[in-house]
Length: 267
Length: 108
View 1 (cartoon, each protein chain N blue to C red):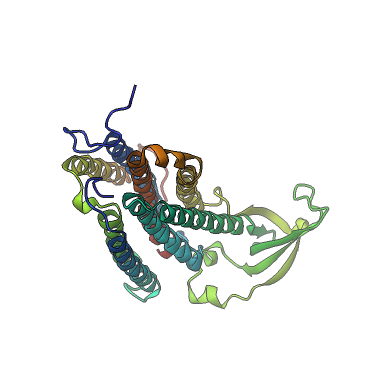
View 2 (view 1 turned 135 degrees about the vertical axis):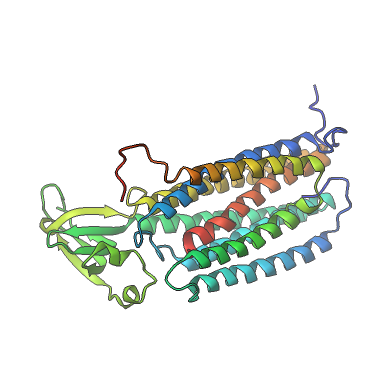
């Protein structure tokens, strides 16, 4: 049995079924991300003065990723337009560009995550805090047994508050150097992973969920670019509609990033 | 994206995309500039409002032109109107409950 209205629009809705379906799906996605943005607002507005981080994320990398996603949204649209004018070669080119741009985005995101996971805040027994990126742990390093040492590339501060605003003049003046810290001097050691504070928790949650959407979208686009393109030979109009529907999802993912970037990187 | 029965010209889309990308470049630069500018003193309220306003312009471009929301069918608008109402309710109710602590809750 054929699935109805995969090509022609339904008379009552004015849309083919997949298109209505994807808009309803996107509506549910708005609610999903809306809930998480609500959580972000709640955490940020509820944070005591001076405890919400500023400048913890690399604006340059965020900007590159913003432009990569904007370009990928454009190549997705051009891939669909190529199908509409029956230029399959151009479709393949534009969709290949989308895949490459998406993979580059994920590569940069992975680098950013890695940067946070090797960034440590170490509370010392003398009350000071050592903060920086892990260079190495000695072979015999064991925090529980207090043996060995860790080497950080960073600096020491007197209070936790000094680490909150990395855009402040004081933070810019900080001199970073290699610090070798014996385990016996460490009171507590924690990286900037999701459990570090509420900012990193919501940062990893929001961007992680977004990255999963990018990954899912890339797999779908790859399928249409690769094995799924056989449909072009038999049902080009239906194939074009599939590209349109996957493109709508991709634009939505771009839309989410348009708000994630300023909210997390710029404010 | 637009209705499947409308005629499509690849060159017109390439021109549209070039304009959209140029505007996205400008708005992204404007957001970054606003973020690092000395606006609103020590508080972030004004900066956040300005940056989000620019982000809305960016989002309008993507939704309006790349997703062709400006020329969609009535049913899509209906779905989106309901979505906006529910999303505002979701955020609004969360915000309204911000200071609604159960009796005996320790606060800062």
